[in-house]
Length: 369
Image 1 (cartoon, rainbow, N blue to C red):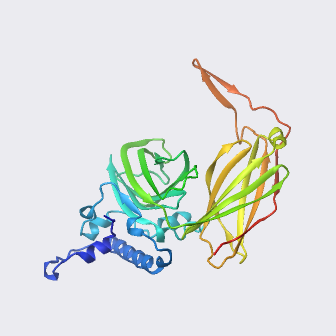
Image 2: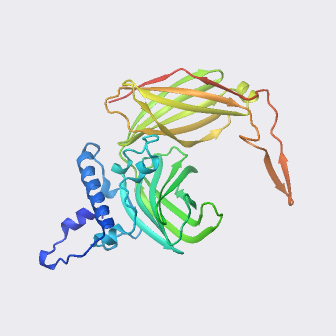
Image 3: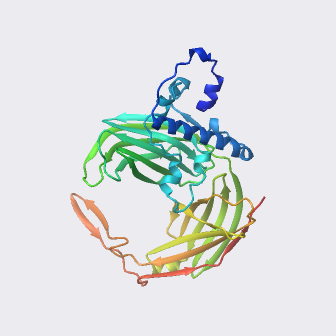
């Protein structure tokens, strides 16, 4: 059976008005309900063109109609009144998450342990990256920016990368965003996700609140369109090749390869490649890297960018390369422990000193409409 949002469930209930008992609710609860209604209405107005299967997008282990309940205050819980945690945490820096709330699924799954309640508010999987927004309510102050000691595991995928950010929004109240990206390139319409939190480090003290906050959910990928590209550019022994672009309703993902010649590898310790993107209309797109995998001479990367302008017909992808020397500041030595004795393996000396940066020719992609 497909999951239904709370508004669908309430609409299907047969309730006599005489049997409804009015109850007093706080301003906090009123604000939360208003936010949920506004978000639901906005989703219904804008999602039709992408045929979003929102109700089936997230299946939470153990979640049922009875778990949602009929009382709005119980549904709202004690989550801070923030309509869009994605945008709130980005704070206008990149705009990458401007449309994620609209296409995410409401979860509202809470686990409590040792005086701390963690709630997953919203979840979304764009085919590459899983994003979970969460809120924390604690009986004690955790500092301005506590650290979540946990791991987001995307099951049945080969490795991953991720990030976590959290900020204080009230007395003993926090909101956060955790992401996890698959490093493999499998086409998975659905992923099983486990988020296991063992402790929370209190900011500024080093003290930890230990507990058991374990979450399990299954997420269906957002609607997406894949365009194969297979175009590249080369300069100074570095080749960047764009493999494909995946467009979702709220973002687009660029998959690209980094190939480095033997001459460059022999001269420099490290090679970083970045890409910047604009379209034929003059829009510049902010992006967030998803990590990569491969070998020293051939790495495969992906990067997620903000929502694509529907009127754009071309993407201009500009790669840039940075070749650099390992130093104690950017790399350090390698430590090996054997028979209780630790040895530091010195970084081999190479000819390249400091760093060298250069921009490469544009890769122009005609978008398929």
